[in-house]
Image (cartoon, rainbow, N blue to C red; front, side):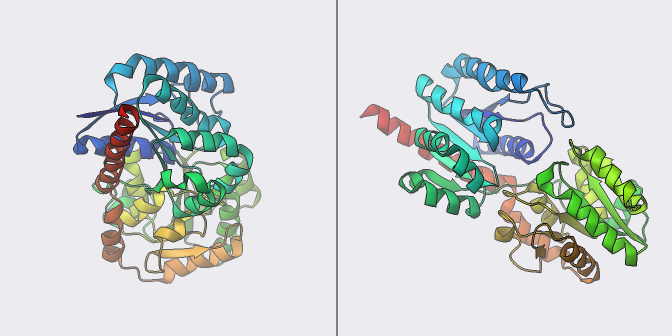
Length: 369
């Protein structure tokens, strides 16, 4: 049995955390034993954010001690990394420690703003890619950026998108779901599932909601998620006098997200940048249409308007028009659902397991010659 230590923000809300947990569960079916090291630990707080020194401790001291203590029990280190210095630091630490304990390292890089990251941290990125047996990206748009910037190590770069739990995110009775979450049956319901940070574009979505509500008294926007911008977004909603058509429900248990999606007429993402957002796959898994901005890996999955509607970012008028059009469209839920199954965690895990095997074989060849 292959033994892997998985480094990632397991205890936080958000896509990287959900990806890490979903992948770990599915890897068990591939005969892979996984030990998770949570870089967020119990210090994470989605509203106030973890202090920088606590983050440094978890990502340097804690991660180092954990890998050294586990060195005789692991065959590979896999790090789930995002952008910014703190988000990418675990990948750097894993690259160094992988060389020290003589095991191969794999990195999955989730950051959607790849060009921005390369411009700021090219040398750091190059170091990690060189030290890694495989460097996994979650979208082709990321790969295009890195292949141009780091052409001589592009052979180490692979793309494996996000996944979702096909048994949890599936079509459910919409009326029953609305009753469960206390949404009027007559509402035209749009739902946004996203952390409340600037890059998710909530301010543009609120402006779009204002436009829609002016001509549709049954319109309701539900914002699922929390984050540092929540208070200012709630204040803006009240200032625009549209509090009656926008409901803030906060972060929800993962088990309840399918209920919110199935209760909705459409799911909306107003992001300014993205990697490969998990809610995109989860929405498709529930057979629901997605109205989203044409950024990151979204156009790679929402291939036609049989799955949803894509619009330019930061344009509330166009976003509002697309949401209204989604309400007026007859969507084929079975078609959307059937096309989503290729992104189930079992499929994703089998691709990752293959990379593990190739990485360990390559590592063995390099160190036996």
